Image (tube, rainbow, N blue to C red):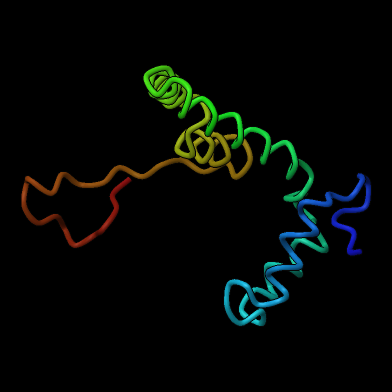
Length: 121
């Protein structure tokens, strides 16, 4: 069996998924080689929580079938509370705190042509 990551037990479910990909269930396995290689080195710990991810998907599916209205409410609440984790906020913080760069002001396109500069500080 192939081990994914180096500091955790391997996932039998993940091994099964990788094996059917290698066997060509989804088409030419060569197309998926970069994906499989990434999973094998797993620098970003993509596979670290594969089994818990499957469990969460299963619970969401069960909730959808059991109580569709509650599932819808939960989805809306979850989406509404994601604001703090937005990519815009993350990029703004990286720009400010790590890269030490500041946003540029863009000209208002409704005011016609500018002096030719795309961005104006």
